[in-house]
Image 1 (cartoon, rainbow, N blue to C red):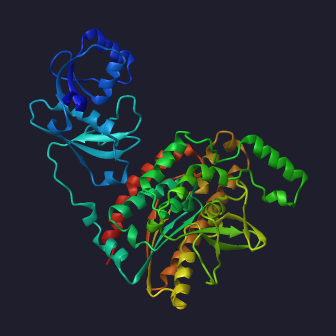
Image 2 (cartoon, rainbow, N blue to C red):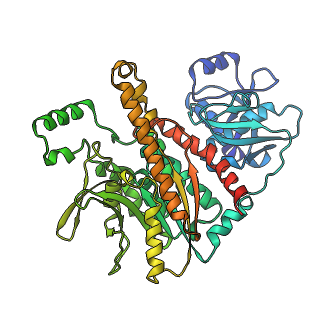
Image 3 (cartoon, one colour):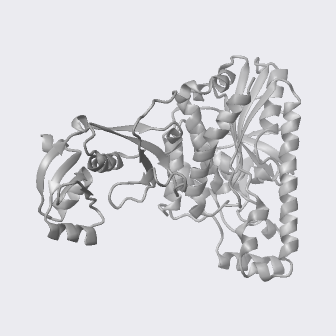
Length: 488
């Protein structure tokens, strides 16, 4: 029984097979000891040795309970995906090879990072199971002092969420694939057991894509995992048009100007969204559901509208809130003009065309504010205070890789285009600042805002997803600590 449960083994392998393993076997990792041809190996490597029929002599078995190795987790690592069991057993085999004369050893899990900080390179290292590509970062710590529990580090933020006189709104900004930064904040909220205090989830464009499943009770880890699936091409979806589509639409526009074709766009996004996120609708838990709202621009009415699957009854709002199916609402909010086909939604007998709500309100601030104000005025809401915790992803058009392509840089007009893009970014940022100033003019409104400190646009390129996730994981904790420090 002990052999079958062994997480780590001490084995002896002949030099001939050691050489063979090092040359040919990516699914086996040998962690050498001071004794010649003796190695610590994990359960994963044991299976690979048996599968390859490589002779080895087991000298000792170690179960998890009798290994003198302790795995501890840094506070910030709680924002990252935890290492799986195979990686944990691999790090324990590695640690046994470093134990030496010590009675025990402590290994610190730091998180998943794409690269080591030069100042930390000597202390930290990467290790996953043999053949694994996950960038789990570890370090050996001689003296581990337990840090304060993360749930005890943010008493001021917790009190804001828990105030019974406050409506709490989670606002998730637009940004395409940058929306995979949002699960990091969701993890923080769940870690502090604050989700039960959120009254509404609002999203725009990519923020709607991430916010919808979270409002249904989906674990943020699963939402983040979908990002890695897209990065690894697990789905047959595309997030941008190919060259043939672009050429076809340009030719059609040339010969059929000023027609409905101008609104056609290049791609239909709802089918792809359904493939990636539709499964969450089937597993929703109504007991754990938070009301969800997203923003989309109605082309026919020439106005920004709020779409929701919530039952509105006879309730009317001055700032229109329209009932729509969840996936229809998300598709409408995510239909980036020109690139994606406007989403058609039937309201009564009229067919309305919607595009990305980020064209008017990149971070939902004004819309949730107006809803709260109207609810309070019309006695649908008794709480006289509003807390918005928002994520501003703000992809900068002027930092797009398009402007730095060798061919584009040679075009005469590229500098003018880049100056126009910089001007556009300034206008966009100015609009967000004006919206913040407007809602904060009300002394009963409090705003907690996080930023994604990442240059470039990185809106539709899945290759950037791991960097987006890592940037959020490495920066949001520090921003939240700073916010906590400055709260009264």
